[in-house]
Length: 311
Image 1: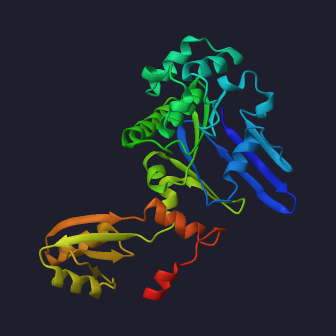
Image 2: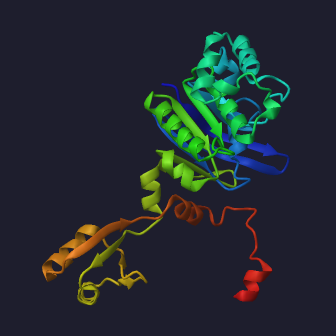
Image 3: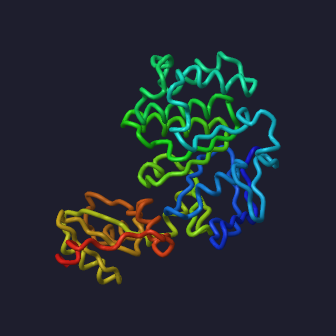
């Protein structure tokens, strides 16, 4: 099984511990979101996995081997760490051809990935003429060049327009459906929630969470239900009698924390009160993430003078 396995991984830079005894696995067949505040150790961990830095202790392997031990690594692991890494004076197609030649990849594959990433029409342009979004697409094309079993992308949505963001979502899902191991680092919570099946969250170099997306969201919020009815006062009174504390919003909807949809529906049915709307309310990924990492953010901004003055 082609997985990324990190075991007791530790990295010190002088007195600073950037990665602190991390242990986790990234499995094939799903998209794993890699989250954490600035300075959490995400980039350092990815560099350690890719052999760009040496660990102080512990191991990081891909399919049981260190990255340096892989034959033709571009055919095993596709990586995007920095979209600006390609030489600006090179033609995009020639940049990919050079990568292909150095990794024993057929030249015809270059045209395939240019097509996949939407760059076929601009393949003969110099990279320095590309926008940030086009450079991102070129970086993703390079990552896909070897048809790898493992794909590691750092902020792949950066600079993409709305069409590009929709495209990258579907690409990530497709790679996972094909049985590949997909690890995506991002600061965009709403975007991550649209494609990730599993989450790994770091804070100050330590592992804070390693679990499926739905389990993570449920673990950071109480069950709650939002509803709308034809007789709000009577249902509200019935819910209070049952021990709930419904809160009515400006739109007339009631929000009930600590309740399930089944419990609220049963109460309404016993009272003979029709429900026009009944929905489960869950924390967003952004809310759950901020709740988890609130004390793990070393660079949190102070309130602005204006905000303090208005308070």
